[in-house]
Length: 279
Image 1 (cartoon, helix red, strand yellow):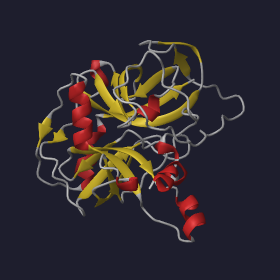
Image 2 (tube, one colour):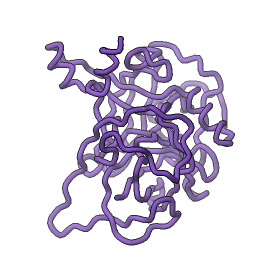
Image 3 (cartoon, helix red, strand yellow):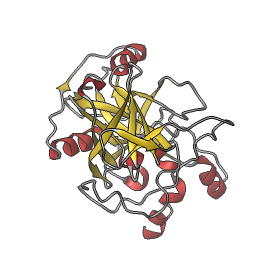
Image 4 (spheres, rainbow, N blue to C red):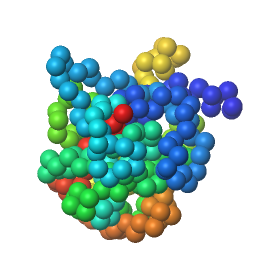
């Protein structure tokens, strides 16, 4: 079993952060409280190169609510509002950022501050301006079933694909993650680097998970001779709820009848944030 677990980092692709902010084996910033430790950082993909003469965006000091000086985007991801002035994303999206910037659905670029990170669950809580968007509601009963339809909403492959959010659909494939990780779901909805930290929604538009990683199909093919398809992972919604409550945040809970995927996307749109890690 330990030998199989040792292969896990090789089978995952970048935890879906769209950049190189993680590196290997370095600790999180000392000014970010951590609930649990021991989650190994995994490699991330490089951001697109700047065109000749193109300037990187502003960056701020660690933990500061406002940007300062100049810097470059070293990774990007997705987050979503969970309470007034509070947003949720993956810990690996914001780990070791000199500053974090978020773009709201209204197109406003604002600074965010990491309040709490849990590397075991790979979740982070951020302080954002109150006008960042309305909170997304979580599903009241997390009785998720295999085959249940789900929707993702986020910002994959920033700088290559649409600058706006992308919606994908799929199903819950398994009720555990890689190596039977009970904190995660396996899903078939397509995700890419940059989707990290985005909401996994049921067909009622309620949050049931947080997108976190995907299987590295190329490496699996090298080992098995077969290319796996649509093997992706999300942190379970009950893990996210526990994390938020431990941080003193009271999420909104609801049960909503199923709707179309387009309607789910419209519900999520104003609450989902494009996140940039500045270095």
